[in-house]
Image 1: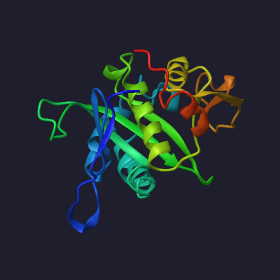
Image 2: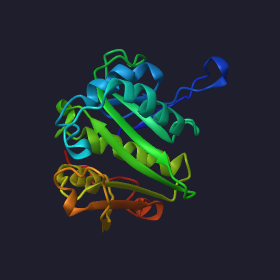
Image 3: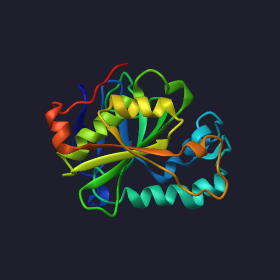
Length: 213
């Protein structure tokens, strides 16, 4: 993947740094409490939630009171791991006020040196390579800056679009498994899949995914 860089991080009041990640077509910054309305709007699209809730939107009180706080807690582990809000580039490269596209995740697990990759994008950002571009950028950041040894992602076996994104970002199928859900959605009977990429394999590939827009 080409065209990604991490700028800064510049100093901000209180000593915290705002990490900014720029890719060829996107600007990613850390998720904040002020993003609640963006997350509610994202989760209100039945197509976006198809393979998550069967298309049901996430209520605002759930996003604000439970989901967003959990995302912010996951982001409180340095300037790499956690959740990143993605926006389009603007003419003024010093500003982050382009169109909100969705979010990306590189979340620490209980296994040292391992993180889970994820993303959720607005429908208008589908099919043009944004998911692969953002995933590849976070993978690079995780291996180069966070010292990760392994990155993995899971999705429904029937979610072919997401599986293609993971493959293009350089991950390969690791396993198929089944979970017991209280309220399974259509397609759950086919199970879940886990894709993974180790740092050694990433380096062997030249530090890039198989990006193909």
